[in-house]
Amino acid sequence: MKNIVVLVSGGGTNLQALIDAEKRGEITGGKITCVISSKADAYALERAKNNGINTRTLIRKDYPDVVSYSKAMLDILNEERADLVVYAGFMTILDECVCKAYPNRMMNVHPALIPSFCGKGFYGLHVHEAVLEKGVKVSGATVHFVTEVCDGGPIILQDTVRVENDDTPETLQRRIMENVEWKLLPKAVSLFCQDRITVKDGRAYIQE
Image (cartoon, rainbow, N blue to C red; front, top):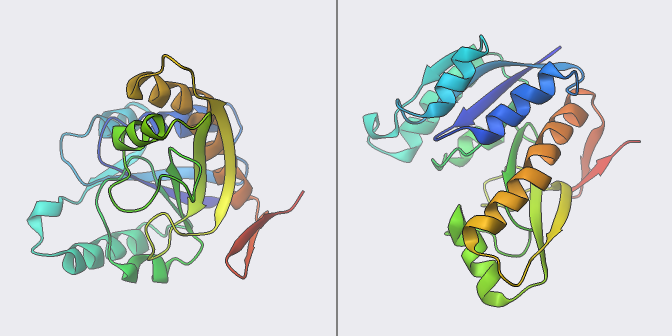
């Protein structure tokens, strides 16, 4: 049984999707063992506590720089014996020392179809504002492994939704969360825990 450690900063809707999927028996071979928040008041911590999951906080402003914060995070991940680290609305940038210590063992969901609308500055509603401004007809979400390149790691899963003519950033964000993010992230986590994802030459392959 693999230990899944989830990193959060806010409300924790993707964390809730993972918790619900685990309760439904949809995550095979893994269990959420700890939730770590970069903010003390993140509602995601309440979601974890309500479901009997161990929580820890690692406040960014308590550390002078990214490197010291990242080393502290790495210590916690090692203490928790993390097999998989999942970003679920984790808004703090970590130094590359963390992803290098956990190669292809850190996973993130991005609310767009990478390599479009991704990288520095593309987060939250900013992504959906850019999508609407460009006038694309489909958008979606991508689950990918985390590397030192922002949103640049191997793509694990993607799915799409239609962009409607009357969409606002908020309505598009909601549609992508409900129809893609909350489904793809638990699926990707389960595939990892079943050892069904392999990475070769920067590409992720799923074993059927």
